[in-house]
Length: 230
Length: 230
DNA sequence: CATTATAACTGAGTCAAACTCATTTTAATC
DNA sequence: GATTAAAATGAGTTTGACTCAGTTATAATG
Image (cartoon, rainbow over all chains, first blue to last red; front, side):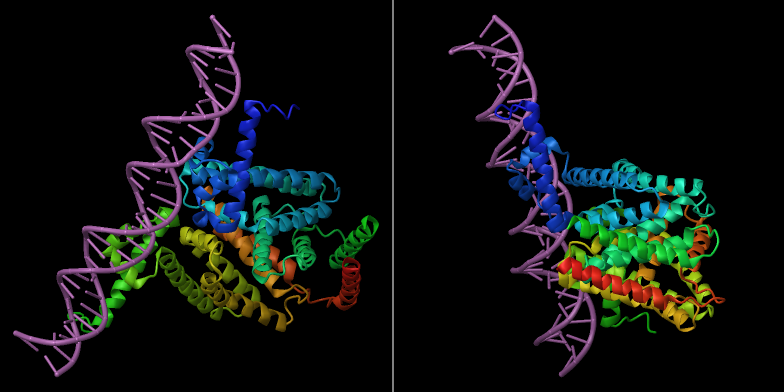
């Protein structure tokens, strides 16, 4: 890498990245309406006109920011799932991961939710594709759980998915509104997984007992982990 | 009612109503950005300036539309609950009602969801109050269910609420995107209630003994806390 | 190195749409 | 019918997204 002499391509990419970074900050701080294109340009160290060489309009700029967010999200989810073998370990990871990311990027998430609406059809194809890729990770976990005979198969997959993500995003909102984001995260995840387990687990012998114990054991494992790393 | 000679107060109220009606249509058709104040004024048969005598700005206009929607929603929910005695009958009614209303007023709902964001704090107080009134109906049903000993009490009420409404709104979105709104409604409600029942119903046979587990869990949490802060 | 060609950039200017306010209209009261 | 205050108007202001004719940087060529 010859940093001294950046090629034209490199310069363009660096600039695009700078613009996206600036847009991300501006949108996070002020929402879509409140964000000013002129301000984004200034933050990116670029003239306002330049910005329109990189992105068609303000809406496209937001879409690019969201696409970037989704890509990171999907990558993290896939990686985490690969690290866990048990179905409910995987689901718990996904729940914690999704909730944590929602809390960290709440403003962007709100813009995403609000962007499904009121777009010409050709515009929202992008969002739907991004979303489909992301939830494919969850779908895979669930399908494997069903194949293993650990999950009931009488509930349509998409409804379980809507329950999972709907519940988590509403919980994230509640936590945000209460300003008690971090402290209750484990609690929320534990109860969410508990509800999901009771709702979806195929009862092999006795129902409730093992799940509660397992939950506590898992929690204990995480504490132990912290001890090790700390 | 002397319709021939409307009093001044009546005229003002009729006009406000006309403006709200026009705004409702315009916002539903074009979203917030796409809606034009001039168009709303024209539809209401009023000059643009007049509109600003009734509502501070475009945002306030949307808020008024949403408030109206919420009031209808709350009234319908309360009335329906009064018609049912059993806890899970009530919950099923609420689920079907909420889902049906979400589908009918989907565009308004999206605007509502998108409006929590990016408002100065003093603005969103209104939304939160409206929401609190609405979900109070659900909370009442759940509290009574717990008091009757039909529901487990170890899951925080707000988390059950977030699960319920989060799941339903995500399901509504999915149905909307698939354009198969009406036919699957009963199906969705049935599965949603099934999941909720398995997740929340207290098995009448064996009264579960959560106290031991709970005590252990809480003890563990306290240890974990100490580790974090230490 | 000089010249040319092309890609990248700029910011003053355009335009659309939310919002204002001086003026006019309406209707209640004497 | 005169008086007065509330209600309504729409031309004008302001703001901010977007455009485009002109400029500068970079690469290609002789």
